[in-house]
Amino acid sequence: MKESSLKTLLVLYTTTEKPLWLDYFQLQFVLQELSYAGLRSLISQMKKRNLLHTELLMKKTRICITDIGKRKLEAEFPAFSPRLGSWKGELSCVVFLTAPKTDKQFRYLRNVLVSIGCLQISRGIYAYPGKLPEMLINECKNSYQKSVIAFTINKYIFGDLQGLIMGQFSISELVQSYSGIGKEIDRLLNLNKPLASFNDQQKKHFYSVFDRFFKNLQSDMGLINYYFPQVSSAQQLLAHLQQIITQI
Image (cartoon, rainbow, N blue to C red):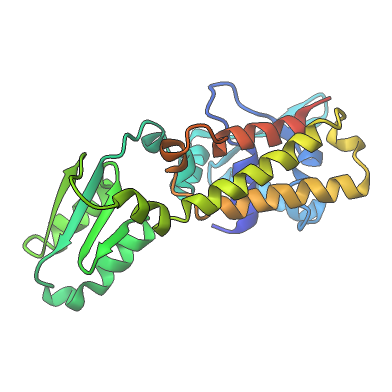
């Protein structure tokens, strides 16, 4: 999915049953790289894919995310995955045995495991936070019946597994970055005025903060809350960014 589409889903995303409605004017603060015509075209395309819903209210079009759009965003950004919201440190492991003829040296399977965010513990041993995705289980059953084994663990006896996980997923770096983003958001909130009345410098600052947040999300596997519960989560940072956009 294109970056502009993901940003649109992100700014409209909410975990509450009550949808967040934004108009084209508000969305353009987040999607400054698009012209007004380009934004309207994007919204129209995403609506056709059932990712967004629009309605006309008092001669103004407003937009919200659909349930399909939410699931799409959660699949793209694990930090918003409900599965990881209650993660308690358990891991699912996949161990390579003998490569099948259809995937010599496990190149395809290795790429799949990396793409979904698995941690490579050593050559041929991968760990995934929580339950393995169904698509991966089905792939293993169909193509790797006697070539891999998978199991879950919820306790390790020896070794610095936490250090391995934190290093692999750059968790400490993300925590520092989120902390800085949170401070910048607080400065914008303390202006205590609607986004529409920001001066050009303040608008550029908002766009820069949102863009930094978006880029950090791309490497956030949703494990920060478990290791650093005192740090603002991606959901909390997003809610504060949305507050800036919607405050009157």
